[in-house]
Amino acid sequence: MSIEVKNITKFYNEQTALNAVNFTINKGEIVGFLGPNGAGKSTMMKIITGYIPPNSGKIYVCGNSVLENPFEVKKRVGYLPEKNPLYMDMYVREYLTFVAQIHKVKDVEKRVEDMIQLVGLCSESHKKIHQLSKGYKQRVGLAQSIIHDPEVLILDEPTSGLDPNQIKEIRDVIVSIGKQKTVLLSTHIMQEVEAMCSRVIIIRKGEIV
Image: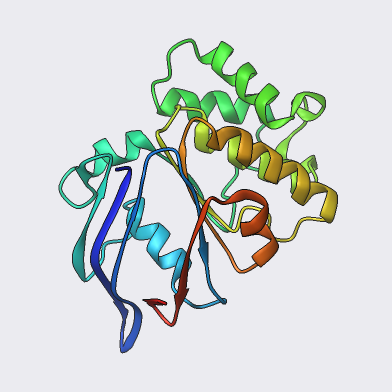
């Protein structure tokens, strides 16, 4: 089992963002996390990745507790947040090299080239990130999320704001990556789930429905 979520509850002041949420995701699944804006999708993903703590409950990623073994979890998880956090003044290749070195990737140069090929950045890899279209910036975000070869991939609204051609291209990349990894992706677009996912978890007002 790749992800195990047990009774996760999260409050923001008086507001309940997540209320006793439970689900499991098996190895090799591409699972859609579907719900309207404000349903708790991003909060759940931040908790799974160890970015924020829950108020109560437990989460295990590849058998490791997110709360007790956060570094082991982070080695196994790739994360693309909804707001893609890129260093705009770095060149594409420079940025991916930087991320690979943080993760202590072996043979950094080869891994960077492999990622550029995989996500379709060859024609743009000589540019600074701020010069790229939104679609290509998403590809850079995808590349950084998988550069350390994680077992689990967490993608928060990966096609948000893209045009139809870019959406199709990013979907194809995710499906290709998902053949070897466990993928949890959030969206509020039904066609997205139909195009990519083997299963769907629907959340509304912080509860699985």
